[in-house]
Length: 282
Image (cartoon, rainbow, N blue to C red; front, side):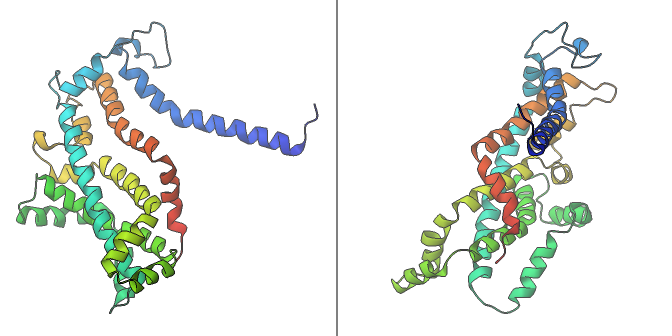
């Protein structure tokens, strides 16, 4: 068998990719192994497979909070509520605003769009104190609505930028033909533009939902009562003052990761489109 320079290079690249993939996935394998085994079996490393005793005990205790921790099912419920509405609200507002920026002319349009774009560069830590004071005055601390509004405000700028660039690539002839037939601007937007933007919209749903689901910072600031904790807070508070139940935390992490992973498998092709969508120029 004759080996060419190209075939050897391809084989080395493939081998390197497999090595990097194994290195990247090894922490996740470790979390899974610790979650399904008693602690005594992983004291010397999760890769030690003798003895191996499979158990669901860590998952049951994490889900129900039987060991005195915050029940994870409460956090999962709260995260689902917050992530769902924090995806729908900014997507609705962002789509309408992005269409206005892409198709209409109005005063200070460019300045306003530049301001919205610059807001994306602001780290959350900068606004932590004024945000908490504002939410306190509005009596929105420790409420679903307060956290949903914060996530929506934080997600709307990037959604506007993303969809505005996407709308700029759509042919205007379809919209003009609909207007000639008597359709209003809103009807054109709902009946013509949105159906053409299904890949972009689903990509935004995937990205925004995942980012909100994984958030810990804003939830830590605004959610103070255990019955309002999100999943990431429940995981953090599973750690005791003098003891760290690694099996419990690992099981809770697996349960928490399952939801964005399932969403990824449902919308995986749109993740790629979502990441490359930033490169689309109007």
